[in-house]
Image 1 (cartoon, one colour):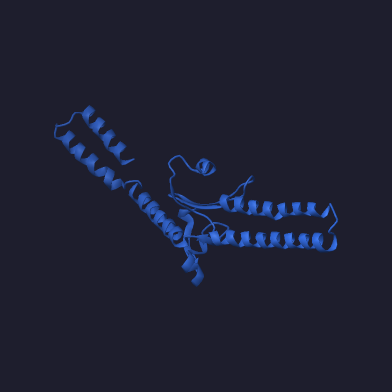
Image 2: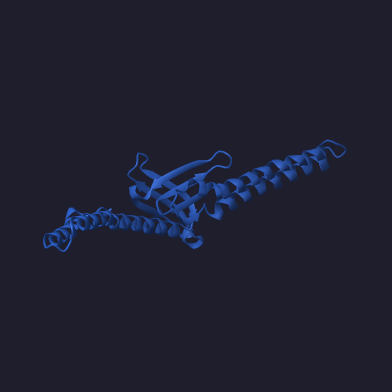
Length: 209
């Protein structure tokens, strides 16, 4: 999480975080477990049947460390891969020591396509395609956990960002001119001095920024 915080802007806030579904990791665990079991059976057969007197064959059990180390690597990689929605963008982080970070600005997100199988609906995983206006065009997230929440968080954050920009956008010249004209009328009626007019005019202009 500390690496993620270093990527955030000064006022950027995290909305939602997820990663690949646990089923992906489970498949890797099963594959490594079958490999370790098969290797253990093979070594045992060689030792007990063909080379029962050998003092070297038992050392072959050390080979079981290879699938176990591979399993540990799979767990670390699965843990380090994240999909993050902030109030500005969508971030994909992968890699353990060497990090790869892909950003998709919410302003450039045109559409989000969700592909979820029947099993995916039962276990809450799916594939997301983020269609953007960037050169890459499409960012695909495969076997993501909680894909509906990810999509909803993305669309809600995009909507808030667009509405926030609309509300905080620059005022029109009419909005600025109206109060200044009123102040000018008061000055013309002698109710405001020139100094008071300039002060209140500056205040009106400052409020419009």
